[in-house]
Amino acid sequence: MEIRGVHFGLTLLYSYLLPLYSIEETSSGLIFRKIAGASKGLMCIFNEKKLETHCSVPSGVVVSPSLLGLDRRVLFEELCRLTSTEKCISKYITLIYEPHDRELVLYSVYLSRNTDYYVNTVKWVYELVTEGSVKSSSYIIREFNRVKPALRGVLEKNLDSLSEAVELLRVRGIGVKSVKAYLLHAYGLTLHAPVDRHYASVLGVKPTQPNKQLCALRRLDCSACTLSCLYNYTTRLFGQFNGVVQSLSYIYGRLRSKRRSKLEEILVQDPSQYLDNIEKTLSRVLAVFTKS
Image 1 (cartoon, helix red, strand yellow):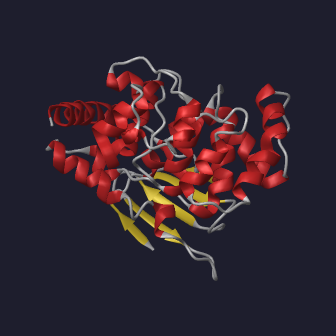
Image 2 (cartoon, rainbow, N blue to C red; image 1 turned 120 degrees about the vertical axis):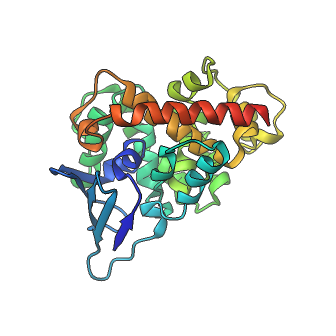
């Protein structure tokens, strides 16, 4: 399977499916292998300079287009068209998601709270899928082990995506930001996006906590909500591009970071070649959408 025009380093950088892959650095890019969940055994070789990816699939394994972001590329490309950004980097990024991996995505989201995602979360989820448990004394792991049965209980009901997310809000430690990230990365629902510090920084506002009970009552329909919060604001402003703009904002924030983990350095070897372009794209996005 050959894929052209997708930067899988930038795409994996912001993905909650990242812990489900082993990442190996090469002289021209990286190799990523699916080590758990749907399409386990999938191996892709990404050439950063040529933006070419060759994927091999084990016999009998079916790979959903969503797992490689093939069905969400159009939104990132459309954002470039709407903003008329020259050499728009967005068209080379996509969203990878896989509903069959929703349990592991949920664990990845939960374990990313208040910690270094690339150092701790990736390691913890890797241990979870390869060894069945996490060896850590962190309070985050203690809390995760307490709520894990409740998380699985919600997923075992096999509800539709929104009903599932609303049910998850009842679990201790799961807030609106968590379920918005879950809907985006497990189901590819780009109307939903977590308002993290990177997104808030691009918007030029301070992140505020929404009313969790009201969000559940409204079934996370921010467009119909009367409460003035950032989730309402971003949903109304960007619509189906909400998750796309948030993803670009997160990537921009991480590439600007002066402290990058080894994993981040493998995924994107030279951030400087992308920073200006992403900044200009985001600036144009805000100008176009706030004007309209």
